[in-house]
Image 1: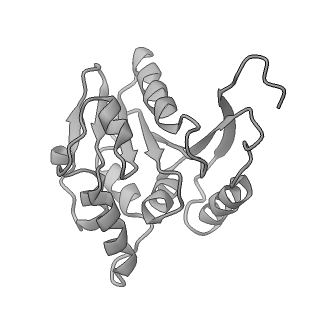
Image 2: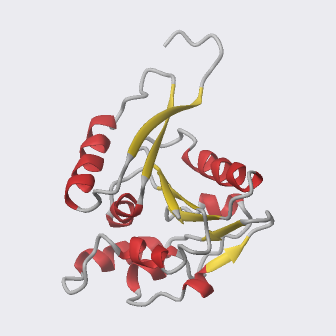
Length: 193
């Protein structure tokens, strides 16, 4: 299973829209895809009509020693596309993980995804506009990182910090991280920026 993390520290650059669309496009090419909502706002889950305010999702992967992946993965309305949802429980889970001094913190998502890697061709992880422990987990699990950007005056806001963090994760936690690419997610015709 190839894992793609969609991330940008800037909000409103279409991370969630891109994640859903990339996952869907992969299914139209015959691939089985697992979409992971890794943002406490749960917009990816909402976009696929699977958001709940208190259901188990990515928060259980972050906190449970042996997460029940069969219970956490939900079918969507699209053939070949499943989802692990998120809600505000991820906020508490992230705090719990950062206080846990017994278990390794950065590879929990990677270990959970390994349990189902034979069931999917791709995993797409939609991330919050943040560098927190669940985002570090996504980078640790990723083969590829895609950074959606807008063509505007603020397009590089936070980019140096993000690229530094990605490089640090690659050097320290994930030597398998192969590609880091930007793509234009939104533009305005006639924009002079």
